[in-house]
Image 1 (cartoon, rainbow, N blue to C red):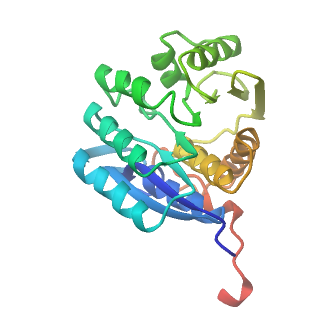
Image 2: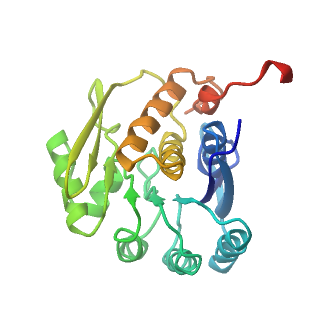
Length: 270
């Protein structure tokens, strides 16, 4: 397989391999792109939960972004966990320095159990430094509730929240609807010109660890290869759904998905 594009991931590490930087690398690699990283935090975790988090200083995060990109210029950027206001400001400045384009922001704010990961000041900084500057933000419902400051209970609420984010300056929004208690998952792509609704059957499984990370990384990969944002979202949703359907069922808790679902190994390597 020939490498199609180069991407830089700015996110936290997951020692269990299901989410974060590890999920991002696996996703991008399986879809044919070259992944580089700037690690924002080191976590000790497994499928049952997070044991500890070590935050990387903002200066070191900036060095990773700038030094890596000085040598190998990324075609797109995927941003995940940014744990503090200082880190958000540092990352914003570094991306401006390297003249980054095609930035996808997954605004990681809330854990799957509902625990808020960043404080109010950091949320303000995300709104100030990123919402207007990135090409796409991919919040789930709890994150969209925080950013748009509304309660989301229905699909109409999702559309309203997405439009609020557009009015706040976002260029494009993909609001993920997995948190609604419905048999069909509705994801909504919105910009000033259109609303596109993606509907898929909810897959009954406990193996959903890292789906948000993997989705935004898949979007960044397709987008870096020349697909439109809307088409990138459609292809990425399909990739993640197939990854969930074929999940390996590892661990005692919320297990990982199968990032290699798209990967075909030549017989000569078997």
